[in-house]
Length: 323
Image 1 (spheres, rainbow, N blue to C red):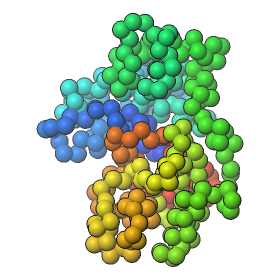
Image 2 (cartoon, rainbow, N blue to C red):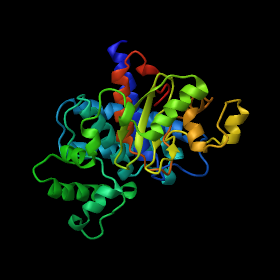
Image 3 (cartoon, one colour):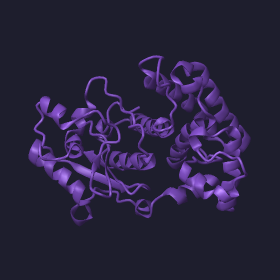
Image 4 (cartoon, one colour):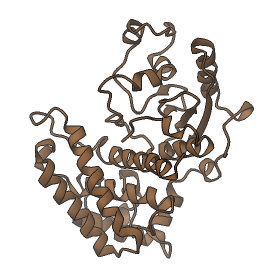
């Protein structure tokens, strides 16, 4: 497989996760009026702008230039996509999340130099609370440029001599993911709920699947299947409940109408995962993160990368259409 195709796959994963992290639960979309395909319009615009801005980070970028880039992203998206945006504009806090998450992925992959800052979420901002000035915003989704500058200043206090990018990576990388297995989870290493899906894929659908897993900061286990083309990442909650971060419009009744041999006595979550590739292949299906759920996008990217590196011959098929 050509190296550029492998990189295109990874870059699309990085962009998908960065945009999902920024828009997934930020209240950015205009709820009423505007074009019907708001997410597609906004997604395409963000992809173009993020790639354009990221090109500058092949060499070190200082803090002021970086903040200027966030400001430019918010301004350009606001100008081009006002009809899609709540209030007609992209907030600085949302713009920071999209750019900083994308740069984090590129840096971890060795594609750019270390970014000067890191992504901020509400959990991190809460840790910074005693170092923030009175009146500073505590919600990243509503953050202004002034709030962002205060977060950066406070984070430097906690980071000490470490660059913010390294400090945040250490802070939010779970211990179990520091040295992830390069091969698939097997035998006693396999989460029992993951093992059940692998077994059902074989017994119900006749498919031989190999799972790759990683634990997220949210304690979910994120799973990427190899051996079934177009199979999206799924998650297992600590309770054992199954979730499809990229799918949310399905019921047992709807899947049964399609003629799929679902397990009627089982939950919609289990059946959704069991037929995840078929759900993903539906016409006009958007491969967006479900809104309203705080999924660990770094864990999703990590487990996809593990699977792609272990099975390069089919990595382009792992999640076709992701953008």
